[in-house]
Image 1 (cartoon, rainbow, N blue to C red):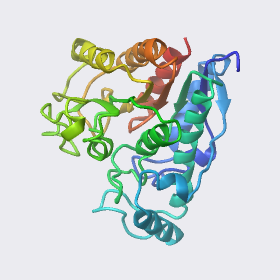
Image 2: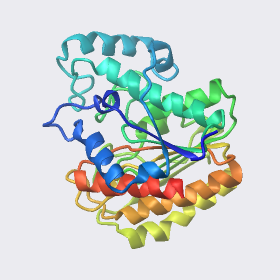
Image 3: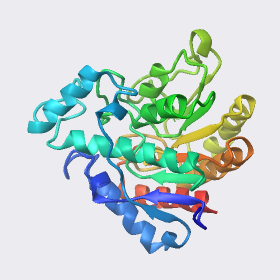
Length: 315
């Protein structure tokens, strides 16, 4: 085992997941984080690992074979959309999606084999894609693939997914709405004001999954004060369910001045979440927490938020 308990994944293959320089989700998101990471000398606190590319079989842990076939076809020419107009096809997108998914699965393998306790992947946390369709810049749902990997390969009985991205993690929520093994907690901007319009406080799971899901809609302009007031609910919910592994989606689009959302947290909120979830992971999960960068479209916010998260994870 490395002397560092945390690993961070970087690499151009990971940055290749994006929709071009003009699109909010472009390759620069990876690069601004990497630059800030080295400026703050975080490489002294963590190990750096290269991205890993997986195959079709891994994608079909979560997605339908028909949908993956569509991605493969549209990836050749990069024409049209994969959904109703949010997620444009681009040449090579299948390979890029396989790298996001492969890196997430590699991180799980590293944590489950106890090489590391904690991992951070900047370009991951694509939480909108459904099993049969893309959505909201998400070609695949690596969170869903991670969850299925933990259930099938590692036979875990309780996995927690915690999401503080401004957008509701609808692709994860509805795919596991009736699955009691997934402990789902999502703090997001109220769906009355923001895509995808879901995640009401009344949505708590269905059937056998009833009561295993917690949605916390936040009002537009909610700031650190409101975040810190509500955050204890997250911890109480996780304490109640005692997960064996924590997945954390820390989208930086809930930070003030994001161009497409209206929350106003500072990076202190995300660092606090990372720190507290790490403590809960130590208590229940033998330390295991996989953190995914998620959204965020203001480059300064990405740089300061993701570095603050890595710093908190590596303490």
